[in-house]
Every structure is written in C-alpha cells, then in structure tokens.
Image 1 (cartoon, rainbow, N blue to C red):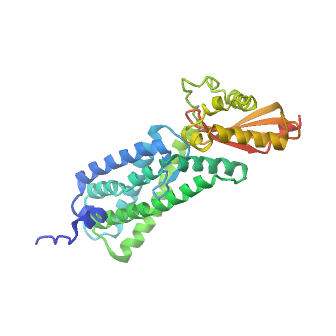
Image 2: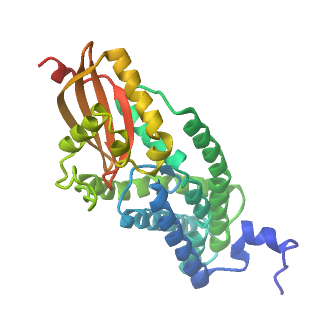
Image 3: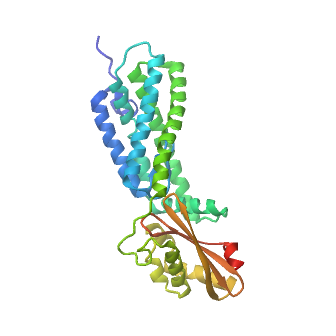
Length: 329
C-alpha cells in the first residue's frame, strides 16, 4: 500500500519534515543546524543552556555554545527514546529518533539570529548587572528592542517544540493524548537532565581567567582592579574619547562621547568636584568582571561600576552606591 501524500508539501516540510527525512539524513542535517546555531549564538552570547531554556548571557568560549546544543539534543533524545520504549506498541529504530530530534532543533537558528542586535545584548548585560545591585534603571530604547525580540523569538520556540513532539510521534509510532502527555513529561525530565549536565561546564568556564587582548594596556596582566581605576581616571580627566575606546560595540552605540560627558557632568553636579578614589573591588560574574570603583567627591562618595566582558571590553557602566567598607576608612 502506498503512503498517502500530504496535500500541502510546503506546510509538511515546515511542520513535519520527518514525513520525507529520517534516520541518517535527518541526523546529518540536524547536526549542521546545531553547529550553525551554536556558531551564530557565540556572536550574540545566545545560550541554549537547557532543552527549553534560551537566553542571552555572558560571553563564553565557543566550545561551550557547541556543548550546550549537543547536550540539549542528546538529553532529550535519550529521554524520549526511553519513553517510546515504554509506550510504543511497535518496534522503531533508534537512529530515527536520534536523527529527527537533531533536525527538530533547526528553528533555533532563527532564535540565535534574533539575539544578535547590540541593543538586545546590552540590555541583557544591563539586566544582569542591575540584578546584582538591586537597582533597576534601564535604557528605554534597549528595553523596547529587548521586548520586541523576545516576542519574536516565542513563535520559533513553539515551532521547535512542535517539531520535537512530531519527531517523537513519527519515530516511535505513537499518537494521541498518551503520546502528548508522555512527551511533556519527557521534555521536563530532559530539561532537568540537560541543566545537570551543563552546570559543571558553566562553572568551569566561570572559574577560568579571561584572555587579555593585545590592545588592552591597562588589563595586560588581568589586573581588573587597575583597569577599573584607570578607566575612572580617564573620566576624571575628562578624556572621554579615550574612555570610549575601551567600550564594546553595544556600549559604543548606547553611550557615545557626548552622552558619556553629560553623565559625568551630572555626577559632578550632584556630588561636587572629584577628589580621589577610595578603593576598588572586583567580582566574578558568569565570565564577566564587575569592578566597583568607590570615589570621593566633594559632597559625597559615589560608586562607579564598570563591567568587563570576556574580551576585557567595557560592556556596562553605572553610577551606584559606594562600597560602605571603603567609605568608612
């Protein structure tokens, strides 16, 4: 008996490509999609650190982005294979679910592309840093871009989950409410399993020292205390063009020289003329460094938080409360 052909081939390719592609062919195409997603994600710091977890985080080595994609795929594949063995009444090939689950992740390419705009990355860095200090004061334009892109990502996430279910249904020969319920349970288990597998890798990345770029004079010896102090000195000396030279792309767009000058003028207008630096503290944060330089102005002390990414570029700058331990000295 011939298998009936779908009425709309385009719709079938988009939402059930496994009607045409399975096994080794699906595995090959799926692995290409995972590699492309990981490579694009490394430029926008788009982390797929969980089967369903997608977010923009700190910069990380390229291998971590590849590891995230492969671990997410393998965890879900193994869990759904076990689920299929439990509920399926027919025999099925392991290579089919392995291949089709890899191919089901191809909409993630679009998610990683949507994470590329500098405003999206900058807001994510800004949110991370402000969560640390509990003070929320966001750039409105960056917030708007962030919301629009998150909304744009949602259909691709839904599309990817639907393909994952269709892969499970077709490869394991299951359908109906029992298949849907089993898939949901398997998806949640795979999410937990993938997180458990990725946490040691993430901790390893966070514990590694960051590489110093050849152009960074102040940070040549990974001395972020000196880097933060030198950066604030540039502000104090009103060498704003030299300060901006340390910015990453998103910061350069968000805080051009005239705006940076106005920010410093607002600080001195409120706190009085700059007097001296009281000290500097450094914190590790997901591959980034949060440098807090506490400064004494004429009327009060002010904290200047400088965030350095993994390439030792300034990816965040905020005026915050000073370190009380340094002010009391």
